[in-house]
Image (cartoon, rainbow, N blue to C red; front, side, top):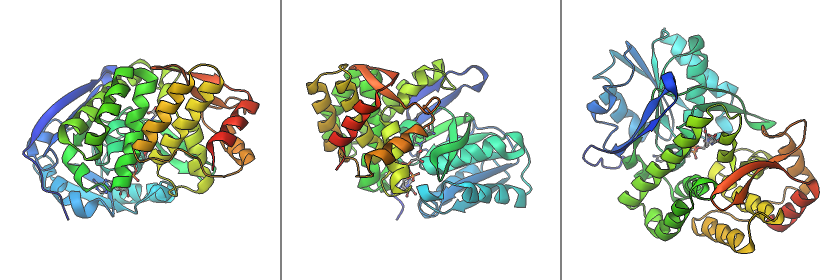
Length: 369
Ligand code: NAD
Ligand code: GLY
């Protein structure tokens, strides 16, 4: 059942500054069905909306109708839903659809959905005819605060998460906050994990704000959600603007992800949501920071309490310590098989560090069920 759209209003615009690859993130209400939202997207004869079987019945009709004001042809392709479909086979369905419609190299792809659709659509856009423009239209909280911004695109490999991909920036990101009304509570909490992440790595006043406003966020209070999306995008934009291709600083955005990716791959993609694994991974990475003597017990307890209060797991599944270690050695941040972790150096500041295996084993013993 489609959620009713609010009157169209642009509430915030955040600029991602990347020279000739710069783009705006437009955050507002009633944006999807508003023709004016789409007047600035690249001009072309055809648009291809990529979405999935869960999102299409709710939002595809609205977006396609609005895009008809801008494009002579509006095509779509509907992918199977879920992280376990973020693979070559599903990616190929996008190429099949583009070729079947004889789409040329000006065709604009629209990623309508969560991070899975966004990451796959971006990768398809990077590859199709060696690169076509694409627009992110994120419909989950996680995608609005993180995955639609910054140009990381990828599919999973059975041996590792997001292992096959490209850096490829969208032409625009449109966050229609109304779409969050239909998001299941578990998915909303998963998105909060990535919102929380920005506090300990970059902005302690934002962490204070999240703690104070968590009840409002959980009941999806419009003003609170709008602020969370805006501030998250500002912080991500600030990081990506300095280090687009992750030669250094950008790695801090992966706080919690080394443990989290091991959980996702170890359990099988889709068992835990990405945000759930990141939430728990942040608790583990904070525990590692504590054991390294970087943060105190009170800070670690504070992070655990916040992650738990957001509705996220704080204990990792029992994969076995050796299995965790094997999976983490495959992480993209590992160098020559040595695990590296994003740690909190001090509240509000993160950095990448190698950690002694014995200490990582202690974390795993302490933080898994
Ligand atoms: P998702 O894309 O699987 O979406 C979650 C679920 O919600 C899906 O079932 C989806 O169909 C459904 N859904 C989407 N919008 C909805 C709506 N408005 N109403 C109802 N249901 C809706 O998961 P996600 O949490 O959005 O994204 C996770 C993915 O993002 C992972 O693959 C992760 O690796 C990736 N990610 C990428 C980056 C990046 O920088 N590129 C950053 C973070 C995460
Ligand atoms: N989500 C991690 C990044 O965008 O770099």
